[in-house]
Image (cartoon, rainbow, N blue to C red; front, side, top):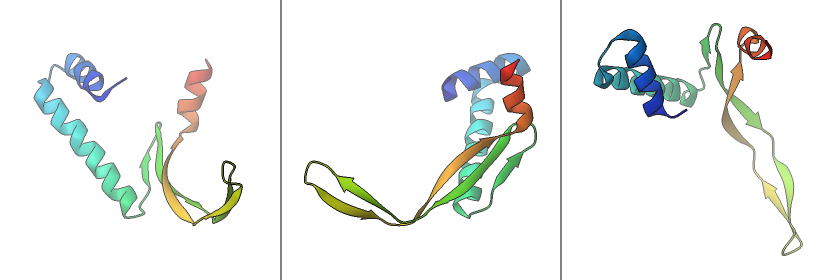
Length: 91
C-alpha cells in the first residue's frame, strides 16, 4: 500500500478532503522521523513502536577481491509491531 492509497482510504472512511488527509499523514511521518532522529522512540499502542537499533562494528568479506572490510558501528531505524497487531495477523 502506498501513501496515496492510505490517503484515499482515510479520506473515504472519514469524509475529510484528500488534501487535508495528505497533510496530516505527511505531518505524522515527519513527526515520527524527527523523534527517531533525536533517538526518541515512538510508541503507538496497539500498533507498534518506531525505534533505533544499534549495530555493532563487524567484519565483512568482499568475495570478488578476497579482502576483509570493517563495517563501523551504526544506528538504524526499525519498527517493532505490537503484540496485539501480530496476533491479529495470525487469526
